[in-house]
Image (tube, rainbow, N blue to C red; front, side, top):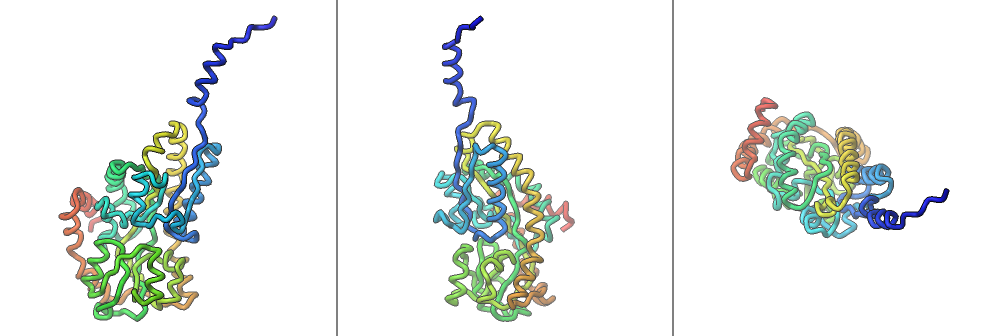
Length: 328
């Protein structure tokens, strides 16, 4: 017996199909770091994993090295405004937009990766709430390795920093260098090498990852493992495009981010030793700061946590809880 074809039911299903099957989504991802930086490689791996897990319905194209023309300190605003669907940026470079993002760069507040994780447990919910107000959602947050001093001339005491033109990247680092007698110049990552090449800079603070990627040995001679502060990157997505995804797609992306973020932290932890050896292999010295310099750095910056707490809403309570946990 031949059953009658139900054209009405078929028409209904066809009409409903777009709501049931997600259309393909293609997002651009702005990353200011060079392709060889581990954060850029992380972004590529994350995009590949998302595409695989979503069955190709969400495709993220990573543009490293500022290829989209978006500078590091412009990234938060670019994602907020929808100039790009996704972006990764260093949190400290957005303190003009969201001041609490600079809490990691308070000198000597955070000692190591263990304490950094504890700080993130306290501050991340606040960060995420503040970023949501800026029309974006954080997918993962991953630190750079510890920050160091890279100099042309040897530095053994604070006197050796007098007048040294030092690359800094936010208010905390500029204040620190000023107190140590140096001359701070706040520059985006991409502007550091040209400044070193022209003599605009004598020194820089950054991670070994960036120093190696940018071949600092062409301009500078000494590395000091000062480990004076921390810096993390956030991978964020514009909330409007995020909300256009299906619930299933959003759940998959969040799952991939939760799976890969600890892996990215492990990569960060391994980076320091690898890059220090690379600097040595290319002729730079690598050493701890002298006791005199380390003591001077701590002495001159001792009140900066309190100043940050007074200046930035919500920071005081977070710092208080952090110090209670770490015994600082």
